Structures are given as structure tokens and as C-alpha cells.
Length: 283
Image 1 (tube, rainbow, N blue to C red):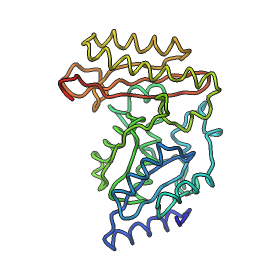
Image 2: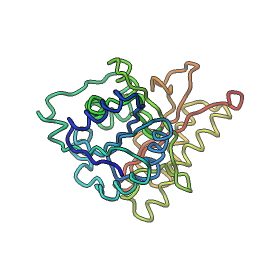
Image 3: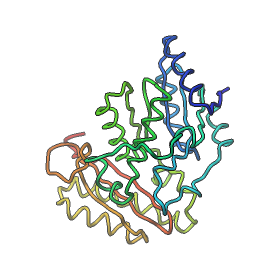
Image 4: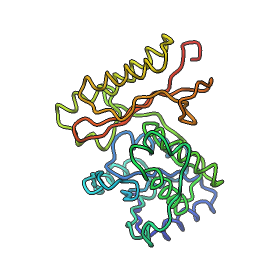
């Protein structure tokens, strides 16, 4: 049975003991409200590690003043039950005051990869993500950490954090887990009404169009226009629908891997998604 730990000092001690015993440690950071996408990350960590820690912490510093921090789903007992079926050793559930003992007096400032897209729509979001991730990596000094590809820009931020600060942890990015109709699994999907849920698949159709038109060598600007219209036709208020370099997230014309990124609101719920693009000859 998984041990639930609230004290950061105890959590760190458990990890250091495991490492001293020669065990490979995997770490999956989450904000709880776990769904099969989270569980796939946990399964991958269990597969590749001797012991696994999962954090459940709703991070206030990555929510803007008008976002959903207060109503973000919190269901720890259900999360714990799920994790105990996955051979997890530790569930780390710290209090906000333990992660931020002096409030938000220290923040990681981000440029380049954190400036665009989500960084423009949600000012301060990636600073909050990077700050809490660095704190969690210090408290759970694992060998590997597991993130989902749905939050692609977040994975690039974490990658840059690890590289620029020379952190001794390896980032593993796992494929997006989807519902039967293709909608990416997200804790926020629970906010959708039945009608919104039906129309939400428009975000998936936009990416399918992007892949089809990319294969046909349509100009990028035209593909972006089609993605945007496909979402709007289903009632989305579109924040962005773009094709950029998958690593730098810049709209360059270089030969590197490209990715289509989309985000928008349907009703009051904000959804994001993406897909990597390649030509048939590159597969």
C-alpha cells in the first residue's frame, strides 16, 4: 500500500534512502483529479523504475487571478484509491504553506519558450509551473520525471528548466491519452456540459485537418486559418491555432519537427491540444 506523505522533509528522506539503496526512482507530478492519462504516466514510471512517487498538489502560483484555482477538482481519496492499484510507493500531498513557506517571494523567470502562446494568454503561468516543478524536484530528487505531451509547451519549459539549471533528472514525455472520440483527457473535461462535450471534439477535428493539409503541402497560414475556423464552427472562442517549431515553439521555416498547437474556450472551459506533423516520407 502506498505511503501518503505530507511533510516535505520526510518525502525527501524517503527518496534519498531509496537512492542510497541503489533503487531507480520515478516521479510523476500531478494536480490530482486523476484520469487515465495520469495513470498512463504512472504506469510508465512503474515500468521503468524500482520505486515511484506521485505528487498531488494544486499549485496556486500557476493560476491567474480569474482562473479556476478555487473550483479546480480536488478528490484526494479517489486519487489515492487509483494510485494504490498502480504499485506506487509514495503519494506526496504537501500543504501550500510547506511548498511556499514565504509566499511567492521566489519565482523562476522564463523567456523564449515560456513567452509565447500559453505564456501570452496566461501571464505568469509558466513562472508558476517552473517554480513549483523546481521545488518538487528538490523534494523528490528522482532519476526520472514523467509528463504528458498534451501540455506540450509545459514539457518544453520543464526541459529548458532541467537543461539550464543542470538538474540531474531525466524528462520522459508520454503520448497524449484520448477519449474514444479523440478528445484529449483532462481534469477540466468534467466542467463541460453534455452539449459542450459533444462540440468539444471540434478541437480534435482541427488537428486532423492540420495533419491532412500538412501532408498536402498547403501553406502554413492557410492551415492555421482552417484550424481556427474548424474550432469556431463548433462554438470555440479560439486563443490560438498555430504551427510552430516543436522545440523552440517559434513560427520559423526551419527544417525541424513542426507541431500544431490549439487552444480555446468552449463555454467557460478552456481546452488545449496538439499534434506533431510529419510528411509520409518522414514516417
